[in-house]
Amino acid sequence: MPITVTTSEGVLDDAAERTILPRLTESLLARHGLTDNDVLRPIVVGSVHVLPSGRVFSGSLAQPAIFVELKVPSMMFATKSQRQGFVDDVNAILNDVTHGKHAKERTFVNITYAVAELADAVGSSASR
Image (cartoon, rainbow, N blue to C red):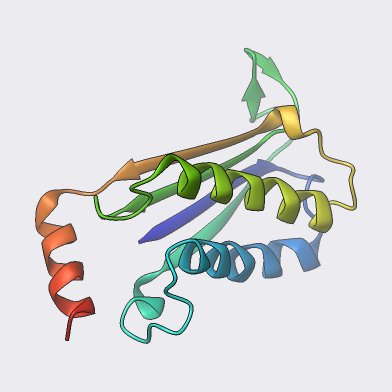
């Protein structure tokens, strides 16, 4: 279940770049009651992409923004409250790691669902 964070230079400092994915992973797992699940934890993977200034756009203008994208099996984020809770967590995490300097209005969260075969494989692995 990949998590991808994309932003431009200067939005996240070095410490934030190193800590954001573990914190997002914890939120993802916690929102599903899976914090202690040793089967799913290793398949939550991620990357942080820091692009040169002027290469990240929001509202068709080059300006600082943060995009958090997840690909998850269809069984994840089944309820609106889980999705909204994760978005709230993302905003809180970003507020913390940017020391309140990043505008929430330029944070974008995109959750997409993986193909059914992956969901079936994860579901069968998780039930073992």
